[in-house]
Length: 238
Image (cartoon, rainbow, N blue to C red; front, side, top):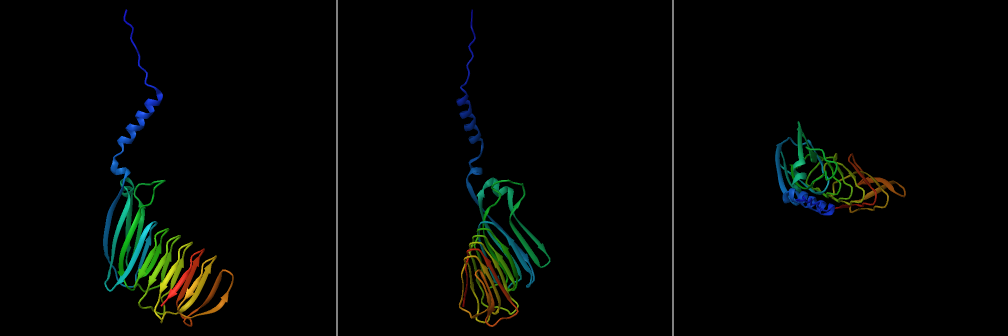
């Protein structure tokens, strides 16, 4: 009489084998951090608006004498995130809008890509930049700019400045450092919980309180310089 035998795999061993199989089935390229570049050039006329929405990385914007917006970006993330999240560029007439984290496939988690931007715009173009932790650097771009970050610093270096140019700067903990020509003038509105304000250019106080002051830069003018922070400071240098 022959008796059959049944072999039962221990539950712990089965789970371990399944875990190994799942890990092995995910390509190594999807798990490792990768890098890719993005390039786009658009023709515009001076005087338009450039808008950028980004999260982490860095942003550098430089003004040129041409009539083009030149976007170069380096993106870093896992392969699946680079595939599902892309840079979206839209142009409407003389306005250009860039979204660094456009979700082609909706993701609940890991839904941003670290992106370094190097951008050239016509020197007379308004900027509207919103980032989370990416520092923002602007050089030689004239216009009424709006620059906003949560923790990234903001640096602006302007060789020339028109009477109508102004700045609207907002951050939580990031600092704003501006280098302006002696001719820059306008009204100043500084509002901060614990940040400081310093200026090489003369500022005349009009009103002041524990957390804010209003005044005139270089005797005042039509431009408006607004700073709103929680702990970030603002500095104006020559």
